[in-house]
Length: 212
Image (tube, rainbow, N blue to C red; front, side, top):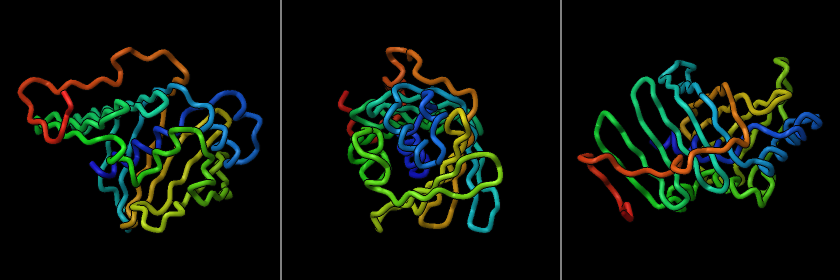
């Protein structure tokens, strides 16, 4: 759960971007434009978790949606269904197979994550050391290292092409890497009114203060 939450909170700060991105010539510029211009976003994703030795530990896929400020959801459909929904006040974790829901206040759950980028009020450089990385794959790569030495992740690396964000790699404090690859992105679209509303299904266990 923790790894998925960290990924979710970080990527919730980022979206496929408007035309200003095409004019920028560095990954840092693309990132700064990115976090200042997001509104809504929806895409498919594939996720791979890799151990320090380079072995694949886990693969998953599903869909992601975001609405600024502070709302996002991850719907994992493979290898087994899970849902993470942030409604602006709480974060809900629903494990379908276990028939269990856990819920936390959103500000507490995201306290040690990059979710502050959601606000768009500060640039990434305010909280992260940002470094452009040379690349031969035609994409613009940028690495973010938290200035807070007690953060529970080491780096987040992002890859942009001329259209927007294409990959994200997060390395945690145990040297484990999680790679996300995005496809079929839709930006600044109208989302359903109940996109970020979560109501626990009847009969499931709920752990935490739901406020319902």
